[in-house]
Structure formats: structure tokens, C-alpha cells
Amino acid sequence: MPETSAAIRIDVDSTRDIALLPELLDLLLLLDIKATFFVTTGPDRLALNLFKYITDPRSSLRFIKSKPLRYGSHSLNGLLRKTPVEAMCPAVLLRAKKEGHEIGLHGYDHYAWIRNLRNMDEIQIKELISRGLAALQVAAEADIRGFASPGFTVTNAMIRAIDALGFDYSSDFKINTPTAPFYPQAEPKSDSVLQVPVSMDSVGELFMAGYSEDQIKAKIRKNRDVWHEKRVPFVIYAHPAHEVGCYMQLFSSVLRDLHEDSRFTFLTLAQIAQQWKVRV
Image (cartoon, rainbow, N blue to C red):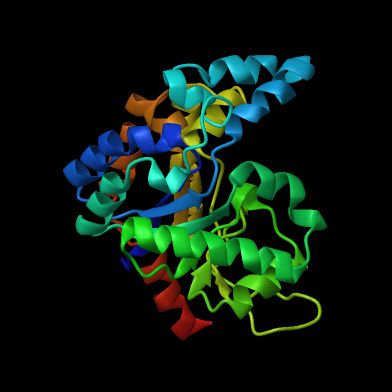
């Protein structure tokens, strides 16, 4: 039976995520899985989300489940200090590159990106992305060819910006139904960059939505059956601060289960994009 592509996308949003990358890289090395790491650049201001949770009681339980203060001073980076994410530990990014993982850009200033993107024009977005590219290329000593918008936030101006900057592909959509890589349409029309969508919510998101560990495993197995039947890439994603820091046993079990499914072969998102550029 023909194999279906599978991929693990790792979103590095904060210095908390950077601190947990060695543990994640050990797991990927053990399983012999090559992943795609999308790294945020610029200031880590995610601690400012504390104020959102404090003022919205409905979010309190989700906040507590995320174990926000588990990482000590990393939890308050942005309030206590101004260390850029990509500068927190360049050695771990170099290790990821050395071990064959792909490094992509996850925007600049994750917190501000999500809050302000819809009010920015193409020129402003290009300036932010260019600033992030320059910083990440230095820190990771890599040619960055893939992009992923923080928080899956997408606007026509952003689509045009990544087109203009010449990325090989982008991963800006999370679509919970089997969807092949595609070329989006922005207005005014432009030559689009191929989109490789994420296939479903992360383990941490499912857990915070109320699913039990057994239900999460069953949902992922069911989804991958459907994605294989449709012959489209099955792309799962994770945040080290959540999947490694809070749900490591469950996350490693999910990865191992998928890795042992002979119907799937793990690729980086760049490799998937290259395959689908020939087909689309």
C-alpha cells in the first residue's frame, strides 16, 4: 500500500520552548524522526497573556492547566527581561540543524503579531518578516525557506508579503479536514506560495478542550486513517512548553504510534512542499 506523508511541526514561540528543545531533540533522535521547527524571533512577550487570563475568568481553568509558572524566570520573560527568542540558546538551534531538522521562520514578536497583524499593510508585514529572517539566519546559521504565521493568523496583505519575499512554502492554516497542500488566492491576485496546512489541533489543545488521554489517542488514530484514505499529508504540530513540558508521556506515545504505522513516512514540511509542487 502506498505510503502517506506525515510531519511533525514544532512551533517555538517563547524562551520556555527554547529551554525544552534539548529534551524534544532527544526524543526525535530516539525515534529517528526529522521535524520542522518554526522559530519565533524578536522579543518574547507571551507573559503579557497573563493579564488576559486574569481579566477573563472563563479562561482561568485553561490557564491553570497550561502550568504557566513551571519554567521559573522563563515564564516571565518579557516582563523581567528582554531576551529575544532566537538569542536565548543558539546552540540548540545549531544542534537541530546538525541533526537534520528543518528550521523555518515563525514571524517576529509573536505576541504583537497576533494582536496587530490585521491592522498592518503589506509593507509593514514585509519589514517584520525581513527583520525576523535576518535574526534567525544568523542564530541558526541556516538559509530559511519556510514560513508559518504565529497563531495561524492570515490576511491578504500577509499572503502577498510572503509571496514577495520568495519563501519556498508556508504553513499558515490549520484545517481539520483532509486538505492537500494548496495555493491560496489573495486580492489583488499574486503568485502564491504553496501552503502546507496543519491537520488538527495539538495534543495540548485537545487536552485543554476536555479530551482524556485515551480520547486524544483515539482521535489522532481516526484522523490519520482518514488522511491516509484521502492520500494527503498528515501534519501534526506541537509547542515544546506544552507537549514536552506538560504532556511528554502522551506526546511521545502519539509520535511513537504514528512512527510505527507503516502506512506513513515522516518528512519535513519542505520535503512535502517539494513533492506537492510537482502535483499541484
